[in-house]
Length: 324
Image (cartoon, rainbow, N blue to C red; front, side, top):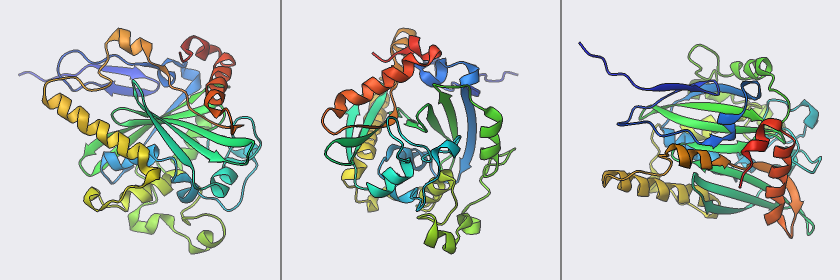
């Protein structure tokens, strides 16, 4: 009797298995993979929808102004471990205020060696523009800023066609992550051992009409994961994309879908898709840069690389992983 076996490696608190043929691709030198164990924290959750729907909510930078809209702002000092509750680089303005008051951003998409970079611009006034830099890691991950010092890298792994597990790595450029605190926050809505959310379509995602009137846009609590889960699962287990009408705010999603179709065609012809890396190519992929910051309206193009470089210089483990 013989049993098939697959190579497995542990990185950043997650076990990664390669189920393909031949040698597994090399891991890129992304921040989430090279940061020391003290500066990373991994968690997961279960959604009842196709993996592509779960991925695309993270590719879309515009949805946060509505889906994650809070009517009151909190003290950013109390935001540890929670996304969109802190302030951005170079400003004391809470992210909740930026998203709420500037809900029609300009989105620019650039193709990269790892997938795509999205630059989202919200003009505050003639002197200042809020710059948000996020990334799509082909084929099924996104990389976004959580706060001035912590980033989120999230992979979407199909359980089957209609169920998905997301795996998130939080990476800190500042102090070591308080893993116990992070875990406690997330276990409140995604309890072990199966990490299925306590709020779901069977209990209307915890919807509270009074909260919707006075506190949040969705009325579904303060955890943005629940907002995203509702938005993705409410489309059905497999979204009918023939009924879509994509707009200018969907540029990142449209570009990604074209990349995905091109990769499928490449594999069908016997070629290798994006991110099937050898050791040399994997070592060359650093970063990628991601941030929220208040920069100049004229000159934002050079602002965000400077902020990223400044953050790396102040993080000892990241200096050797500077983005070229």
